[in-house]
Length: 394
Image (cartoon, rainbow, N blue to C red; front, side, top):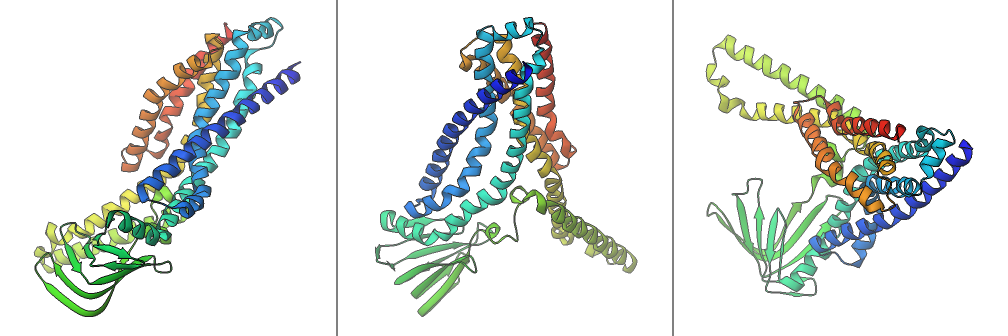
């Protein structure tokens, strides 16, 4: 009998979950693609190329809500039809009824952890790479329709566009410091993307330029200028949040070695300046950049230590959602699964996600240990245990 109940519940959970996750994933993918298309003015080609990268990103958002909605549907319908009462009267324990949902949630949580890893280390970087590779097409499209195109590192406006020739372009290049810029005017110009160097090049004719400190320059012939694009796309300066979990241990070792070597250098130079009486070399102005570099490396170390814990906590939220949702659906005894879903999901939004954000932020800043990102999951586990005790008395 138990085997038959398990088979029945497993099939029901799988059928509802598959239909729901497919629908929700497609909707989220459309939202992601639409957002990227509008923000970057993407054409059909780039949109098609980003679809594989968007899929894991959409699925990672769909899984927690989908598994919660699934158990609300299945167990809410069973409870409303008094099937739970009938099973208990036959000597079947509530745990035997809930076990298929818990096992399914654990399996889906493992998949969710892998998806979280793939989405940030492959999906997000893939979307960014497609956008960068389409930057030439995007720029020409914006210039033809709006006669201007802007990014964080430059802004260009033209009188008109003739094929691939920009007529009377005016380009303002921004430096690392937002207050520093160079304005360049030319008779004509062309744009192009260099995939090897990951740069956007401007080839301009008869250039007249001026910097913000009133330095003017003139190039009567052709002038070539390249603008480096997103550094994360070349894989050397990837943020911890975009690293794969398998890459994090090596990055941790590199960051720890850098911190140790930097601290040794600072200690040695400090001792040397004290011994030689060069106290003017110990002022804050002369040490600001080194201390800033040390703090930046320390912050990266905290983020690297937090990232695996955060992805696992995000992935296993599927299991903890089921711990709360399944017994709550049984106790409410209503076939209206939206009521059960709302009563479970809204408190989750109000309590779980703020705790997750707080734990993640505190761990990344070094104020709390990395495992504190599981605070929200622990709270859900306590609530789920309390609800299950109520089901046993049900």
